[in-house]
Image (cartoon, rainbow, N blue to C red; front, side, top):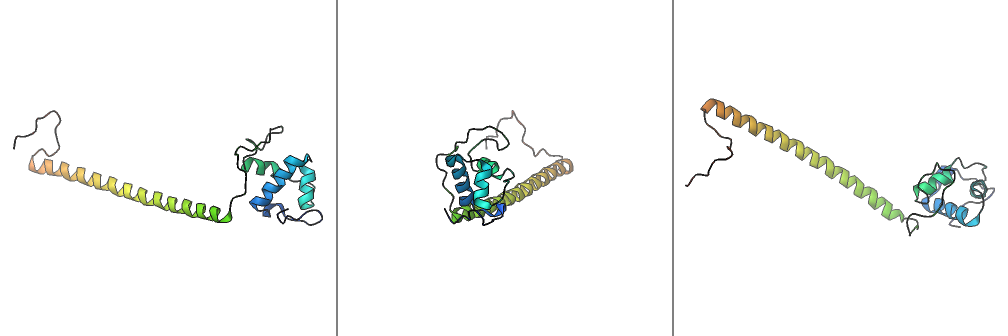
Length: 144
């Protein structure tokens, strides 16, 4: 059973891999045992403190882990454990995207400052030289 520790061998409930969590959920759904019985089978502890339902919610077996009576059917057709490399790659991609967002926000701020500087420069030039620099709408282009 995927190297899970069963009966008389305690394993702290926060240290299950994703594959182990899915195995416990599948065992609960297929065996017809109570959550307490399945939890005791894998951890040796009496109470699961709602972790089985939480995991079911987390991995798409139900829509709300707080519900008392729910239909436990996987939302996704494929409920296979993810590969550890895929998870680390996705974490890396998320980090890259966050960095890209920060770069784009900096560029936007810089662009806004340039726009403000240009507008200020045009306004000052119009005042000092008494010329109209801003484009006026509804005027015909020159025939040069």
